[in-house]
Amino acid sequence: KIHESGAKVVLSKLPIGDVATQYFADRDMFCAGRVAEEDLRRTMKACGGCILSTVFDLKEENLGTCSLFEEEQVGGERYNFFRGCPQSKTVTLILRGGAEQFIEETERSLHDAIMIVRRALKNDAVVAGGGAIEMEISKHLRDYSRSVAGKEQLLVGAVAKALEVVPRQLCDNAGLDATNILNKLRQRHAAGDRWAGVDINEEDVADNLKACVWEPAVVKSNAIVAATEAACLVLSVDETIRHQSPEATTRVAGLSEKARTVILLRLLNLLKA
Image (tube, rainbow, N blue to C red):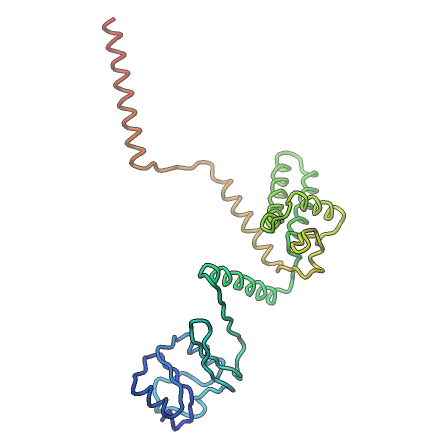
């Protein structure tokens, strides 16, 4: 029935025996068993058709289509490529590298970049990156702290100083002189250049909004709110209790017994005297 339906590629979640594999090969058909359910659903969404549990309801409208199917070897692995899928809305990225640690780091960086673009598409408000928005907020808080009396002025100033950690860390990661770059950023922001940030390529300061170094505004807002809540939680703790290990408790008990022995000996010496 599968051959009569006109199918050329057969994917199964369950294993396919050697006899069935040879049967499909003799009729110029490709088959693959033990395919993950997630891969089956992704293929169905891209090529159309549906996942069937029996061949008795196999109809032409249940089959998916693609312009080209081929098997290629990439590195030490063989991959099946479906090209020209009519309903495809995604792409597959193959990451290659010499070490597993390098691949994992590349995957994390790629995932972060994709999530940033996804967030930017959902929330079209963006701000300049490279520490520009942090320096602008820091400058605003420093100006505001001068109008606050009492100890609150120190708190506002501490928050303004903490925001400068972001551009400083960017400079350290790029091997730049953080002190020199931060001084330039303070001067630029004091002059009204609110989008001035760290330019790693030129090792200087630049207008990151024009340089298309953007970050979603909602990400920055959530980061500042989360950091503020964490700081408030730490400041609200007035006492900590640490449970000592059994070894430490034994040492303390041993010292106490020795101290009592010394005191008793001194008392006996005083009585004898």
